[in-house]
Image (cartoon, rainbow, N blue to C red; front, side, top):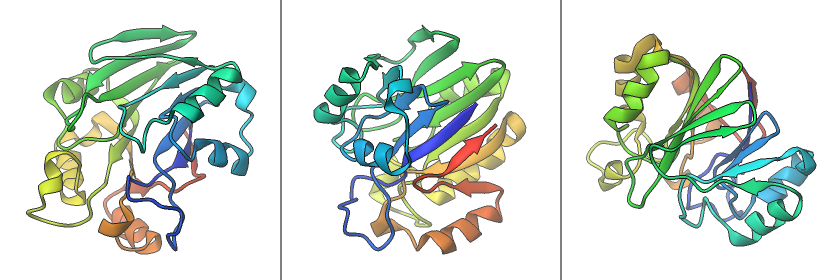
Length: 220
């Protein structure tokens, strides 16, 4: 499997930041796009994505930084199909099996486990601590790659941890989940709550965690 990060930022992205992080979105195997946000079309052009290959669109939730009607309309006009999901849905999309799980967020939110040809990935933006059902699904079969929400930096006592994840929380979850996940990746970094990418990347590398950036491709 392959994931291309079309955006790795949070809702505070304006396009004027020194470090360029669009609202979070990802493309799986050139076929499944997660979160048709406002800046996805720009990312598709910049990273030379063949839009005709995108067959399916999933959406974690309807917050503006993850869902945009104009983007969705454009992708549908190019042949993609929007798959509306709710927690506990199990969906077969061609050779892909999608399990939607409830995320710990302020509005109804789906996280996804995507399976294809023996590989499994977890995509969990936005959210605070993972729900037990998510952990259980990860433990049962293991996950080759997991993308975690990392909106909040290294802070303690911040109200946002009830709807998003801090880096402290991610490190605690990693210690608890352990080898059930082979590769850990963070995305959805708020520029107002983090240091620069180089510093963040170096710090998370110490813990065996990849810091995603716009345009990063990972094959697993």
